[in-house]
Amino acid sequence: MPDTPLTIRMHERDNVAIVANDGGLPAGTSFDDGLTLTGHVPQGHKVALVDIAAGAEVRRYGVVIGRALQALPAGSWV
Image (cartoon, rainbow, N blue to C red):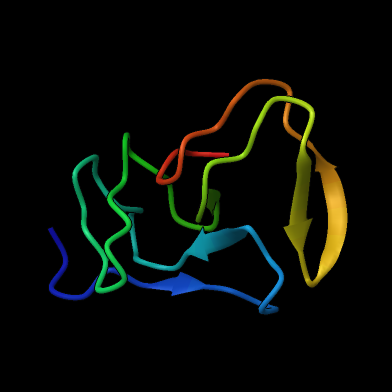
């Protein structure tokens, strides 16, 4: 497991971030803010920063980029 798990959040209103670690991050990885990954998230893929309800907006860059097809708990691969 990497020493420091890294994500990229583009805007303060985003509810997802991009995993930046080479090879992604495994389930159980914890971040300083208390977020814990519920499953493996590949490098360059999105992780939910908060619980996102089914049908709710997915925000990146401060804008809506889609809607959740199912409930996405915080820490899950989006």
